[in-house]
Length: 242
Image (cartoon, rainbow, N blue to C red; front, side, top):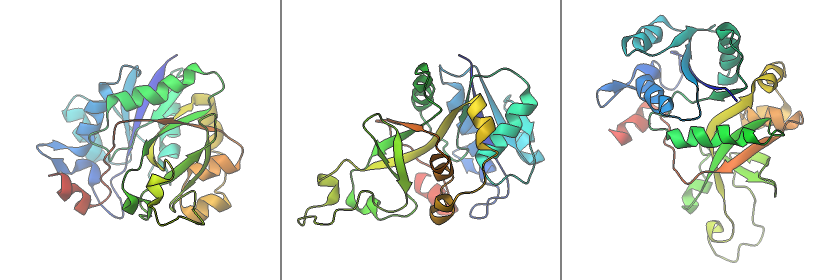
């Protein structure tokens, strides 16, 4: 099974313009993501998919691989697919590695790829147990609930499930709430189908692309990871880790 890691990296983020080139203790964010992804044992190759010459130049400067993609893409999934088509190789699994996670653990990439040892898996992702009750109320933290087979039932920005009668205890003491870790892996043929889907009603309500896939009948395998993941969404997030 051949797996490739693709890191979508656009320059024009509305909340953090130029984010891939932000300096993190002497290295750009995109370089840190690339170097971490390259440590994965499950990937045969890693490439940055970008829409900007400045990012291409930066990746080239540290010896990484990159490919130019269009500026019209609305999601990393779409950008990954264009990159896959341009690469022209026969890949079995494509891993969409978020370009704003400079400290992603290579083991997490290995975990999502290993899921495809099961021939029925279409899409895989990760989750991590939420320990702090306050996190449940943060809309920026996506939560996921799974069925007994480890497949996603639903993703939400709200706490799920909702306890109608909580008995005064923190909900995190009553249920294993899970934070979604935003790394996705797809079978190449499934990715080709996903990019043809129109935005769905649930996706538009929650602003979560993965709900489009669920609403259209695709299954998403969700593995529990014991490693925390830190994403940088705003300049303020960056200051917290410096």
